[in-house]
Every structure is written in structure tokens, then in C-alpha cells.
Amino acid sequence: MLTKRIIPCLDIKDGRTVKGTNFIELRDAGNPVELAMRYCEEGADELVFLDITATTEKRKTLAKLVRKIATHINIPFTVGGGISTVEDVSVLLENGADKISINTSAVKNPQLINELAKNFGSQCVVVAIDAKIIDNDWKVVTHGGRNATTLLTIDWAKEATERGAGELLLTSMENDGTKVGFALEITKEITNSVTVPVIASGGAGSMEHFADIFQQANADAALAASIFHFKEIAIPDLKQYLRNQNIAVRL
Amino acid sequence: MNTVIIKYNSGNIQSVQFALERIGINAIVTDDAAQIKSADKVIFPGVGEASSAMNFLKERKLDELIISLKQPVLGICLGMQLLCKYSEENDTNCLGIFENVTVRKFHATEANLKIPQIGWNSISNLQSGLFKNIDNNSYCYYVHGYYAEQNEHTIATTEYGIAYSAAIQKNNFYGVQFHPEKSAAVGEQILKNFLAI
Image 1: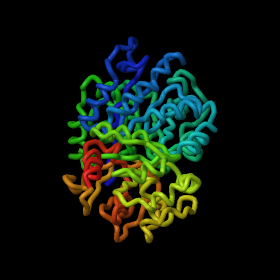
Image 2 (image 1 turned 90 degrees about the horizontal axis):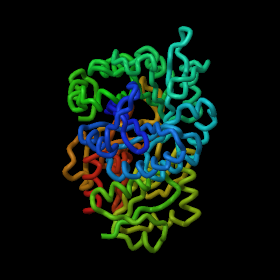
Image 3 (image 1 turned 60 degrees about the vertical axis):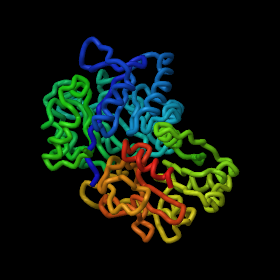
Image 4 (image 1 turned 90 degrees about the vertical axis):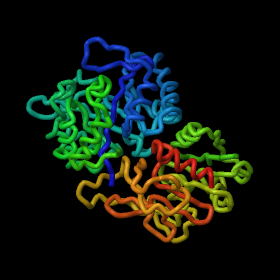
């Protein structure tokens, strides 16, 4: 039986892990390869590395880091952040990334999704969507949540899928960092409307929240960062809990 | 031991090489016929699209070479599918080593069946040395939208809407639909088992 996936997300800045984008001061959380290896041993199903390095020059360190991760990690991993061309993706995949995720660049240039799917296959193209309630509708926001758009989240999810996204990573900016649980309704609306897997993100604060997003919103995977980094929830405990709730997980 | 990974226009070849490094094997990635022929073990990986992969293999005459191999060969994901007779993916005639096996498209007809299948699914009915020391219902990582139907060469099955071939074997040819190079400890054991054949 296909299992639900638990995905820790590591934010990377200048080749180091930083803890929590919701905190005003980014704190260095050390070597991303070591943290990733710990998550592998604990039973994470996949990893996401999000590069928040600002400058192009410093982004070159990302390819080197991806290669290091790929040589040490025996589970799949996705790399995202600042990817806007076929060439960007080519470099990351050649260095061992399994999938890449695009967000703002896809909204600006939707054709990029088609190009990446054609060049590398849909299986490695994750379209990340940041969603926020604006004027009573779930709208897409870009630039890490700073810029509003008029795009309806549901419409963009469908369009991204039609253009060749193999997976969607849906983050609710309403829930992100709140620890009140994932955004069940918009996630459910999207999982019911597209045929590709949906990774839910934003708001995880307890093990019950993970059960809810799988059982009530039919998410295929759930992503979280700080609760894993700060060891508030241990992955083996979370998976045992989910299994006890009759949710299929890999233990 | 001399292990070769066949180089062609497919993704994830590097991942297979990294996985072998983790278990202490330095594999050569090559499309050189002499090197492939003389290898002790050949791995034929793949992520991508069937027709363009077949065209690429034919242009370089790698199709004839692969069919002629006598040492153990392991096809992974698309590599496994290309060992079959035919794939519904863009109406592609494949290598035909598994002469009666058709590769079919998953259909999102059943409730909640997402296409492609992405994630960890269990393998069962394990019937080969390839699965030595692997427990029934172990989890392996899959990413695919097409599958090989069950057939007389099936040596492991997985269910996703229907039961299909997680792995196949005929003589020296082995194929796995999942990605052992991304399947944590279980995958590493399967790679070790293949290299020990």
C-alpha cells in the first residue's frame, strides 16, 4: 500500500541550515548534510532543501551542497529556491537532486513548467504554491508570501498540473508558523481537483495535525520544519502515532 | 568486480552511482560497448520517457548490445520498462527481453489514485535471490506513471489500484520498478544482493 509521506524541510542559506523562517533572526543550525542524515535515520520519507541565499554568486555553493547531500542521503530529496531556468534545474539534477521545486518563477513564467516537464519529466517538477486568504478567497502569493497576486489558488493548482507539474507543494501562509494545524479546507479542495500528489505545508504543531491533513484533506504528504528541527515531534513517534490511527506509513 | 552503469539520455544515473559508492562500489558510467560487454555486472537505470530513450539507445546501437548481454543486468524504473516488449508510453516498441510483457499506463479512475505514483509502497511475493534478507512488505520508493503487468517472470508485486510487477527476472536480466538507489536500507540491501549474484 502506498504510504503517506513525512517530509522535513531544511532552509539553507549560504550552504548552512538556518532554523525557522518565522523567526526574526535566522539562527545557524549547522551542517545540512548532518541534519539530513539524522532525519534519514529517523525515518523521514523525503527531504526538501529550500535555498534562501540571496545572491547569485553565493548560489554556486548550492550545487556543491546538493552533490554532498546526494552522496550521503539514501532517500529522495527536492531542492527549491531561486530556480528560474532550465539551466538552473539541469545543474541541480546533474549533481544528484531528485526533484526541484519552483514557485515565484512559475507564476511569473508559467511556460517554465512545460519546459521543465519536457526536458526532465514531470516526476522531478514540483510546483510550490504559497496561498493566502485575500478578499475571502485563497489567492496565490509570491516572493515568500510578500507579493499578492489575483490568481486563485485552485485555478493555479489546476493550471500547473496541466502544464506538467508532477507534484504540488501547497503552503498556507495563514497557517505557516502558527502551529494551529494545516489548512484543511484549501488542501482538500486541491487534492480533490488535481490527479497529482499534493504535499501539505504550514501550520503543523502536533501529531494530531498530521492525522487531520491525511484523513480529512487527503494530502499525500505533509511537510514541516521547526517542529522537527526543534525536536518538538520525533519522526518515529509521529509515524507510530499515525499507524495507530490506521494511516499507512513506512515504519 | 567491475560494475558498469549504462550511460544514456536518462535522469538519475548519478544517483545510482552515488548509491553504489555508499555501499563501497565504484561503478563506471559509460556507453562504450566494449566496457559494457566486459563488465561483471551491468545496471541500466532510468527516469524519463520511453520513446525518446529507445530512440537514443537505437541511434547508438545500445539496444542490440543490451539484448546480447550475458552477465547479470539490472534495469531500474524506466530501465526495467525498456526491457519489456512494448510500452503504452508514446506507443513504444521496447527491447523485448521480456517478450510478452506490456508496460501500461496507470489510470486515475479509482478514488484517490494519484498519477504518477510517488512515494513508498510495499513489495510482496518476493521470489528471487535479489530479495535475500528482505522482509515481505518492505517499503521501496517509487516514482512512475506506467507499470509492467504481472506475468510469469514477476518476482515481486506491488499494489497501486491493481497488483503489478514490482520486479521481474528472466535468465540474467532483472528489473525493478522502484528505485533501490533511493529506498534507504532496503534498497541498499537489494543492490548488494544484485552485486552478489
